[in-house]
Image 1 (spheres, rainbow, N blue to C red):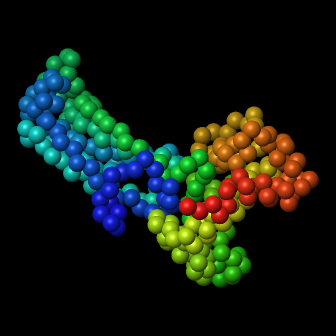
Image 2 (image 1 turned 60 degrees about the horizontal axis):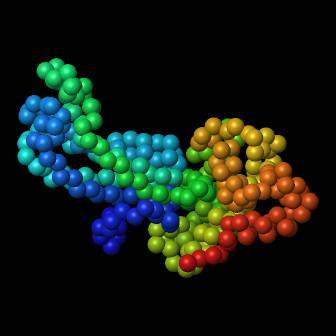
Image 3 (image 1 turned 90 degrees about the vertical axis):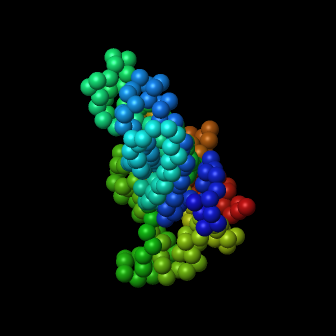
Length: 275
């Protein structure tokens, strides 16, 4: 669901950010008599059509909607799901399943009998982010913080490399900087000027993250960071920005020629390449 009406769900939303909530709808036609008979269930078995979401970027999941089906014949079911952007990230997996609603003590040995037994399932996916990390953000008044009043944004990094990414990163946008704040408000349908601002923010965030990583001696190719940790996220970002190059070489380049390192990063993030 968009401002312009219903559209088929795409494979990816390249301009998605954590302030963009999602509104999804799905129509499912269920032949209940056939589902019961082919599963060996009696004609009065109650079924549930359930939708569940999982976001790989936030490592969160939850029920989206479920509807109890007790009649017979073919039912047309409308699933209407609203998901908070703050809970999402990475790849959004949308699972729809037809399950047994209640335990059946009278079921045949070959038939499902436990509540929640899956009779049918289907998965759709929606990529919200590429391999580069995105993270929670907030729009605040920098005048009420220790940050410079006129700064446009600040990437806050806390915790060690083993800390969870989602709890370690926070992008703060200064509401006093109208150009930047507006760019994030328009992230779903950015204007050319918004794309330029967002590109600058991404480039600066990437530089901050890479420099933060290089400052840690334990940030190395052979490091074994757990999935979803800040270290794993930084390794993924490094591999994307500097494919085929070693962390040691980039660390030395930054130390010996910081200006060249900065230019390399600009090239890697393709700054201001707007479509």
